[in-house]
Image 1 (cartoon, rainbow, N blue to C red):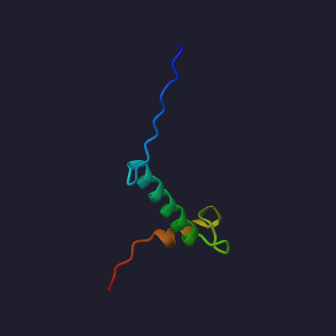
Image 2 (image 1 turned 30 degrees about the vertical axis):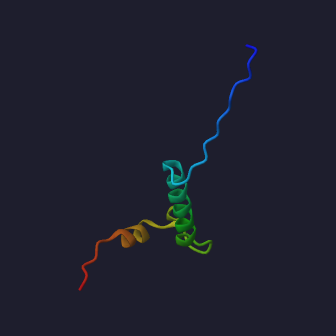
Image 3 (image 1 turned 180 degrees about the vertical axis):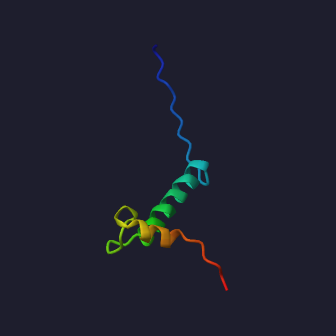
Amino acid sequence: MKLNPNLYRFITTGTFEERINQVLSEKVELAELAIDSNESFITEMTDNDLKEMLKLRQIE
């Protein structure tokens, strides 16, 4: 092939991929806020702690 190929680059905003990256970034931020280094992780909780955390409570 003697001809050089043409290369096109499209620069767009508001794409589906961009929105996915934004949502993932927000989830990471939320997870970092929810889990502090001083808090216990679920794997370190006792069975009773887990039951208490997941117990349904009636709102008065």
